[in-house]
Image 1 (cartoon, rainbow, N blue to C red):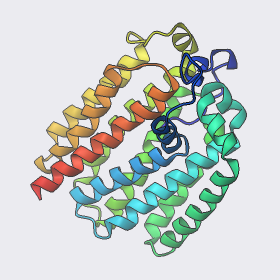
Image 2 (spheres, helix red, strand yellow):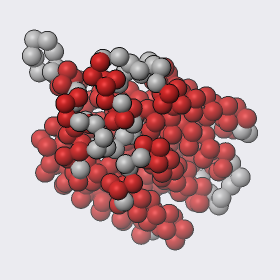
Image 3 (cartoon, rainbow, N blue to C red):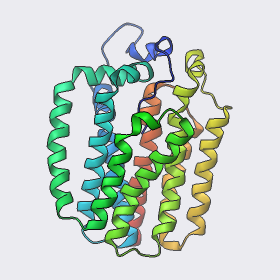
Image 4 (tube, helix red, strand yellow):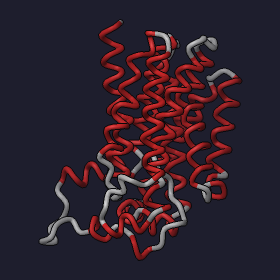
Length: 288
């Protein structure tokens, strides 16, 4: 769920990933499809929707589909606007994604416009408290380019914004049930782990350049520790929240085999959250 950062010089861009194969063949249809899903912020939007659905389920929130749509569409808009506004910096940190954005500029602008219409339509029918919360999240996105210089600060405020969207909105709509703080704590730790790992390629470019997987870097161990914390909080929470343990478990597995490459970062590390939320949803369905 990483957003672009100016710290990494172009000399260490993922040149090896940019070559689809030693023979120079084009990427397969499957690889291109997965790249498009991740690089268009479709993956981020899917994570937003899935986490919101999980939150609505455990909080017994009515109209869960509306809140999931708002989380997904808001994420899609904010992340794509960041890509479109920050191409120069993004080119250094994520060349494959930047190449995709440059090839699809018009389509992405159109998609953002269409999704924005849907988001605003949904927002107009939301309670005032949710409208204010969405405005606050949007404000964070607006100032992201200035705030993201510090990796630690970025991990903190971006993960908080995600929790506000995926837990805060369903929690308000549920009537502010007592499970909200527990749920927020679990997802905050899981999302913080994701964001710490996503910052690794920016803050430690030499790791990717050398082709190692940086298993001993303090930041990566901190990310892994956050998944352990999330698991511990989940198991200490009321029993109805125990199925959420799949979210930090899946993210922890992605971090256990971490590779500091662009595709691993944008697809596997972020995908851990989506897979974890999907398994959690299935688990919750079995308990229903």
